[in-house]
Image 1 (cartoon, helix red, strand yellow):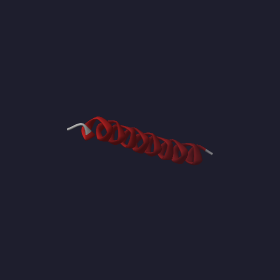
Image 2 (tube, helix red, strand yellow):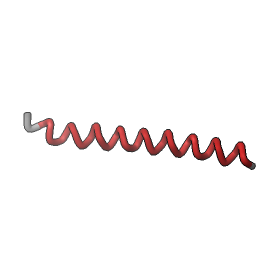
Image 3 (cartoon, helix red, strand yellow):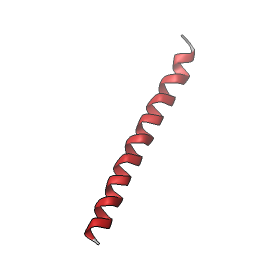
Length: 35
């Protein structure tokens, strides 16, 4: 169970990075559409 201490933050970090990348990509698409 000790491995969960290392696995959970890694999963959370990957999820946050994925969401930020998704939001960033959508933001770039919106900016490109505006210009």
